[in-house]
Length: 402
Image 1 (cartoon, rainbow, N blue to C red):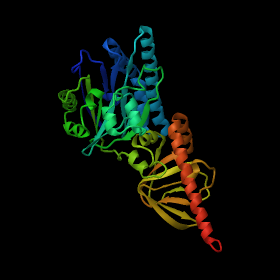
Image 2: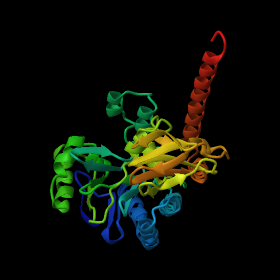
Image 3: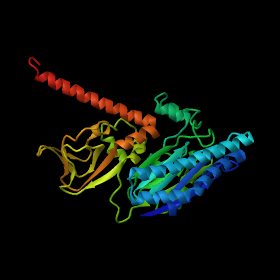
Image 4: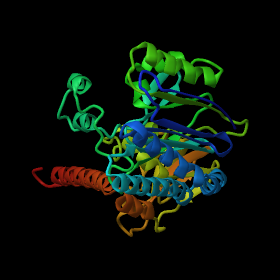
């Protein structure tokens, strides 16, 4: 694995620069923070956010290396917990400083940590992280602004959002309140992926195609500079900061898992938006099967849902093959809620990768992210209700006169 990067921050048309950034490529850690409060207060807030992150970077790196060795949910969630802990400490420190000064202070913070073939993101505010891949650019983070929340909830249209005076009014940022609820995400990386982290002074002036066009350069320092210069040329009246990072997979890389695509094809998760599916990703582990290897046998107890990421498995009962499942199929969801013997035997027909969600991880999801956990539980109830209706209709057709 190799990481190329570049960063650029300019005051722009403002009198001082309230943006800060951090690049620690040896630890796979990158961040952008946009301070709020005016004069020295904004500078102090963003600098404090970055300073807290830098001071914790050694411990974060230890957890990052653990993920690289064994990317199971415990390791991934430990890394994200450590990042969230930094956010909480920074939020409290900035809030206390504001109280002492009788001033309003706050800062956005968007952090990305590359561990193995994945990017782990912790985010608060309206700085953004874009992923540029295969000629397309997409924002991975969600803005914590009032207008963005209204848009997500369907209260306003996209055109109304663009004109809204609440577009940059944040309901969540470090220091505005003493505690925050950062978004915690996992994104699978592919060779050549470019990630752009930037303050709103950049993204507010540029289209998604601009990110694609301006990121098409082998020199990542030039990419960051071009993004900043383009935003300034378009009339940005804010501070302008961009950090550009490019991921190069090593020869031994197996291939990243696009959890958004995998989960989007599964009915239990397809109703969620992309950001929510990225939030679910850390709770999954990956299991590999060789050809003719049995995953579990009929009658065994289990507590896992499985999704076929690649390859194929055969489902059999009583020695008779019933069906084969390829990429995108899932099975075993009943085991997430019931202690019931498996009703079939599952065997790989060729080399196969499975996404695994254990019952314990569902419990952890509900604890850590109640809203997302509730969405999942509701969808499981919907799925169960559909099965009951289907079974009832089948029984009715079998009855005399049915």
